[in-house]
Length: 446
Image 1 (cartoon, rainbow, N blue to C red):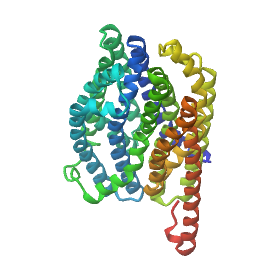
Image 2: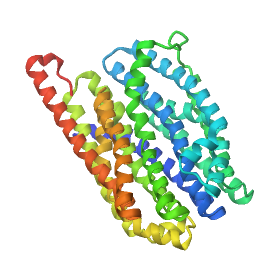
Image 3: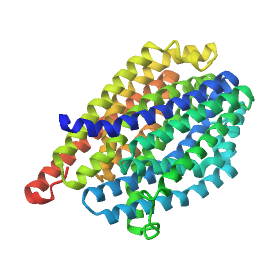
Image 4: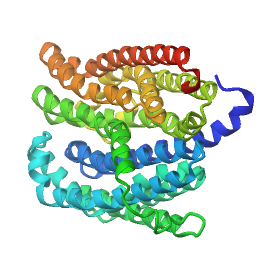
């Protein structure tokens, strides 16, 4: 665990990041609450079907931003400020380049993609209505999501939090206006999101236009070696953001088959509430990343180990508390979203079963964050992309065996397996480090 002298620095990074991630999930829930009351089960199901595409946008920004942030932070810790600045400049341009084709694809191909993701009938109509508006805000969303890790890695954690809090509060206010007062339904919820991300873009751009934060023109170019490293490191945070949506898609497809629109609406509420716990845990890992990367760059083995182990304690504890909260409030949560009586009964039954996964998720996510913070892209990618494969196999398999109940328990099975994989990778890394230390003590790294 971290020592008393490390507590202040640790809390400086993880508390604002946890708060930022949690507020982001709460704002997402508010979308669901307004849409659920204004449109009903079809609106909830439509946003749930569409959300994997929103997650793709966020994942691109997160992957590029975290990859660049890790490289910049490790270089700064090693005393290579020139490389640190080049990493920021390269990442900045990569975010801009990535945004345009994604925006075009969502505008042109929204309906066939959403059909492939499980949208049918009224659910499909609501999903298309949502994505058709979201698409126009893609450049802003990618830029803001990707620049947030860069701002955190410069030590400006409070500013990064302030941007997200402002955008989130604006989103909530506009949700009420567009969805409830003006009656725009799912399109109104999307418009609120685009407007709030545009405002966040202005704040992020203002940060980098300040003289002390400005990127020099000499650094504002694509460094091919750094860009390749960004993509390599960014694969894990990209997958970590996007591939949980493989769970959403797999469950939506099977929920339609085994329980119809009611089951899809029930899972929409479950996934909204799960997002809060997941974001709290992600806040622990991503919040401590600049610290772990910096100490890794400095060769501080003991410091890296202490930060990592503290992350484990906090993340697993959050998972346990999340499970307890979902059990206690399983009857009240469906009514918050305006779910129908049939959907509410299904949610109350499935929510505690699904939530057991949080305990294992805390360990697997903390491990993944640790691996990419110390530049171990291979280990982090094994966990992240292994989850995608397992989700498809286990969800479809358990659905055939036990129907809807099999679907609800499948996520816990996946996370249990991944926890074992993460433990094995940690053990392998420990043995490799010990062997390397015996042979070449000067090369010792955590």
